[in-house]
Image (cartoon, rainbow, N blue to C red; front, side, top):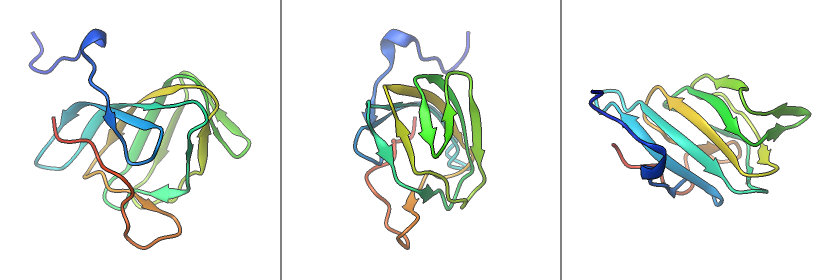
Length: 125
């Protein structure tokens, strides 16, 4: 049996770093800060342009559609933002669920600030 499992009926959602965003932690490597998690965005949620100064972010959309400018990321879409690269703003037209990997500690800075981390990050698993 796998040492770490999450079944659909046991997913625990926690507040994310922006209003309308929730995280469900799946795994965490304390030695690197890397995190693997589900993210859920309420319909109409808009995430401002931002960066992750300590981690690259890789995402696969499972449900819904992210809209970023003229690009629409629907189910099965993949996108990757290298560490400290500004991405967004993006908007969820309906509920969006994605699986996301951060390869280091999860910190968030909006593109127009210098170090303020909005909201919370999910706790370690």
